[in-house]
Length: 317
Image: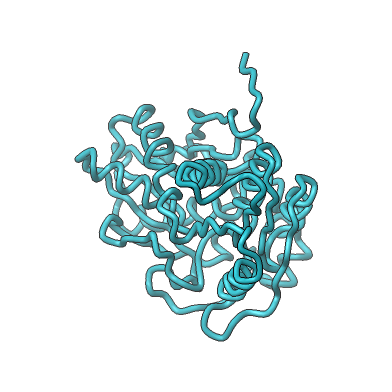
């Protein structure tokens, strides 16, 4: 029986869903939403805060500030509340309402930007606001998940070794690309281990992370309007881009079989299926996908018919 005193001390690391009965391939979906923050971002949040404290960057009485589309903001809100820091999350109007409410319930101040910059989109507007806050008050500490190597190191030390422990014969790994912390941590780990694992990044259509053309994106989590500084494409074997309508269809396909996952997971599943169809994946290959969170925070968007018809018409059906 686990007994914890810190909210980030509990997580389930060894639960996988075999999607064969749903998609016809033995794709093993690593469920990362089974912790008190509800997403894989708890690992990065804890790692970056620990690094900031150890380096002397973050001291008692200071205020954490971060740009987040939702999940990292929730994780940092939880950690900040437990450790006695103030926290300001700068997000945008794509952040789900449950995520905003959770952050505020945990004591965070949430600022929502709605006007994109000309060259950086909504993410650029969020980063501009973070910089304004830090310039106005030197007690603010910006972790900067897009450039913070503690982001990918957290997954190098945890997520990737956990996968290898359960699947020592892994051939394929599909990872959604947001800040690219999970992607870089896992890719670097398997490269350093000298294992012949094909690492496929799954990105959203409209994201510029891997050089795509910017376009409207409504589902938070994956994709960026500027390339994260921690990304090193040389560690990535292939990239597949997924339209949001395909991600939504994948989410509903999983839900029809009783598995309610978030939009990022739908994107990764759709991307894995597209890659396998394009590359002739074999049933003898061991494939793992990472599911960043569960679906409850998306009930008002990905799983809401009014929202879907308003934003996508019939293209998602």
